[in-house]
Image (cartoon, rainbow, N blue to C red; front, side, top):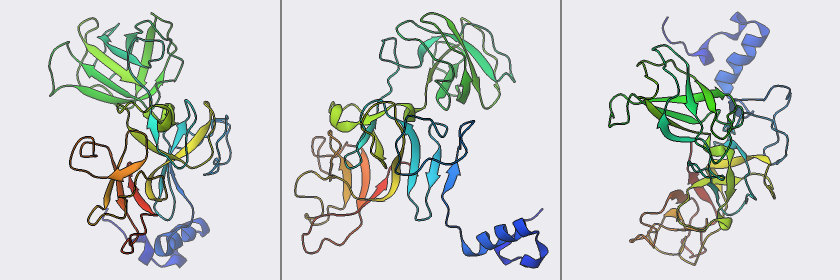
Length: 296
């Protein structure tokens, strides 16, 4: 069937609900668009500027407002800020503070068409049931270099694993290559949005920015929306942003403040890009609005 422009079809042809959809196509919508969605038992979407301990949506659910701003549903691992950037905190490894399962041999064989594999936890931390959902699973037929046959899958579920127990990990798309246990290797990380923290708490220069909390999130354990794209006002460092001619692109300083894209590593050449200034700074008035360009 050929493509149809629903906005131009005679609305009298539709049922009442169909007519509403046709009008939305023709004149636009005013509600937020949600990609992901509510948890079982939840009946209404969590407010955009609300932070709460009750999980309302699947982690990493994407929310787009009519004005083009984008938000990701996130869990705070510590305080999160609304005016200075927050960071992704998850780190893979075998330590008590690490997450996921690091590079290791699979515990069982997996055939073409399978949608789950079994891995062995590597001590240091337990793996809770479904803690890896919406994370990334990387599978290699061997312990060698196989860049053309690596299989990557989005995690859809996992069983709990004790410190050295096995963990069954389910994923979205079936395997296209068989994997032999003890010969095939892999690693798995949870969703990066499952542990977001204030950059101000971790000024190591070895973390990346996730976004800005839309609601006050003062302690760990609160679910909230992180803005990742669109117009925003945020904290700047120094006097250059908006006041130096031609300096329009901004990057994140190691502490989460914004600085101009510079000419050296320390000056922001290698720093993570944040976006660009939106307002006219001809009067050297400094930037007030930034187009955030992290995750569209």
